Length: 78
Image (cartoon, rainbow, N blue to C red; front, top):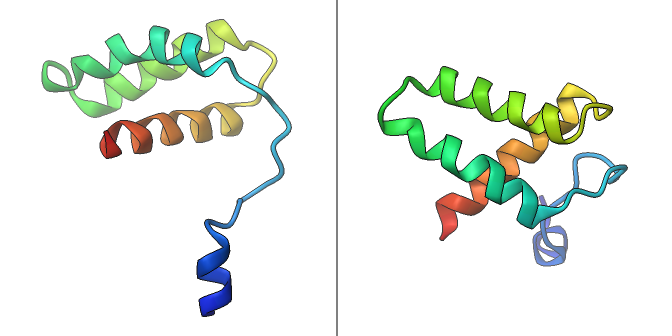
């Protein structure tokens, strides 16, 4: 990556095709992610994806997985 690319910010992996209600998603997924200390991480991630599928049943799995990764990344920064 060149200096000009780094200054431009992060590179998007794909065009955004779906718009998610971030507040609703956080409200529904945050309690599930809070179970991470009590359950194994695979189970927690599975439960979070199931919840996202309830909210957005027509969105493909890979888009929801990307959304979940973004939520986890944002939670790690705060």
